[in-house]
Length: 308
Ligand code: UDP
Image (cartoon, rainbow, N blue to C red):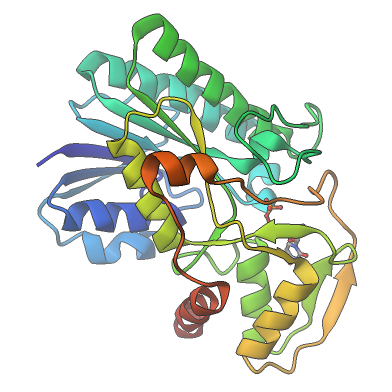
């Protein structure tokens, strides 16, 4: 049995990770301040004797002997991180510093949840790990992008200076059950709007693209990465790419909705295209997403039907 700390464990991705690692027989410490995480996401885990919840921010010092750390704590949806930009940078930068100190103290492995946002509005397509990105350092998204880039730097410097056992996952757009109704990201927005027969809001002309990974596939990628020896960044996501217009039509179709599509202004610095090159993850981790967008959307739609 390993003792595993998951920061942001009550969040969308964190809650799935807690469940998987508990079911594999580990002791889980879930650290979350519920800024964007939700008690509902971990209610079903509270009865496990090997699950412990610590209600605190990753910015505060935390000390406990652990074998592994998954550092997921950070608001990740543009509307959330942009509403508290300074706290977002602190969560990324001070959060990873705290966790790296902990990893060093107890010789634990540490995995950082990084992001496709380190590529900014990419001019290389699809995005490969060797691409340095195109990030606006003073834009509305910079608190998240630069915070996560700084966390990658700190991870790598701890590796160079102290030989810390690091893993860096660059997570591309992910969706599935346990996303919040008010998350603000495109899949949850479109599903909630379609289920309520309200207008589906496309920002801009809808020709921008994203590539969506179902959460179960992503979780398998994260745990395989932790088990591997890879200490450089690796992309994790599903390379199937869609325009937002295609996505809106697909969700309206699957939900049998009467919703109309409406167009709203494109937010500042919204990336035009995004699609991961997952060759490295395939080769080194055997990572290969298996859930199609249609099947993943059906599961996610059923989840939202139950909670709204
Ligand atoms: N988007 C949209 N309508 C919405 C929410 C988002 O058209 O109701 C667009 C957004 O402008 C972006 C894409 O969908 O181009 C993905 O946005 P999201 O917030 O999910 O994540 P991002 O990949 O931008 O971080």
